[in-house]
Figure 1 (spheres, rainbow, N blue to C red):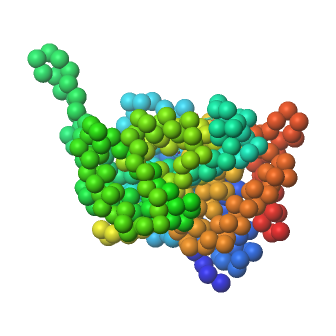
Figure 2 (spheres, rainbow, N blue to C red):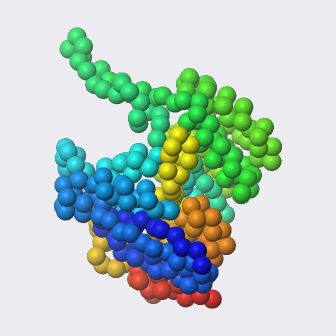
Figure 3 (cartoon, rainbow, N blue to C red):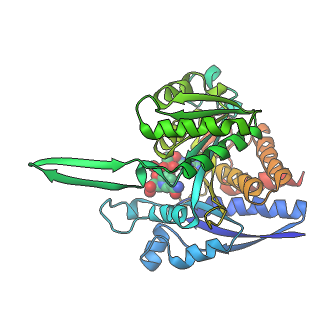
Length: 364
Ligand code: NAD
């Protein structure tokens, strides 16, 4: 029997509700495949602000560093929404990214056929979409210095700085090539090389390391063109890799292709180099959904599928990950729907019932 340590950070709103179902499914994986998962839970986000005055305590970060992977729910809510507040729930996410060196954000976007009518695009455009947006998470314009406003001659000025090192670019692009190798072997590298110096270095590095991955077809797209192609021919993409700002925008755009927020998982991977932890953090892309929190009606599938990514990417348990994904597919194929996906003729299943059905499907 193998045993693994998982840090649980359920957070706020529906976070604890969906994390409970994710844990239920991980435990079912443990029973079926003979693994033991030991969980250490802690409070982050708004709940941690209320309890301790900080969104992320040092102790929590240290606890996370001692785990094999982190399973995160969501943070935030109207109670802590004051934009001028010194402590904000999102500081937990930024602190974890920084503290754990999580430099690669992986967002798979898979369109389930039964949702094809739920997107704002034509069903024939989105049917069959199965892509990953890979975003660099710890560099670029969100972190570059100087970042400031000042007044000169009575006029306001501002500067943000976009800085990357060769090493930061290379490691994220290599993750992109490796992901593509495990899929349909196509990598789209996104930049703005016709205008930006940072993009010219990005493209040069992509071209330099491409020969290490001869089986992967490489395409370069300017970011403006990519935003168009994502909605005109999304089925053509396999893995898209982009620096932080471009990836932020493209990953949100891509999530709309799937028809529902409640279905999309994500992973943020740490660096094993530079003394980093090599840890991964897994969470749904949706937020804490305060409008439905406490009602037991949240869709737990994004959290459950984040658990599948955790099994695959942090624990190396591919068969187990596939089993979870197949169980979700089977439950949906059998016509079961959480409230956010239920049509007029469906009887919606609440959060716990969806989790139970996935566990049953896993047990076979
Ligand atoms: P949200 O994703 O929480 O909700 C958007 C809409 O989608 C809501 O109507 C919600 O009910 C619905 N929804 C989301 N997840 C769902 C699920 N699993 N099942 C069914 N319906 C679901 O985004 P928001 O409303 O913009 O933000 C709410 C709070 O969450 C804010 O405080 C925001 O800052 C925070 N947030 C946190 C994260 C995170 O923790 N990673 C991400 C985004 C937003």
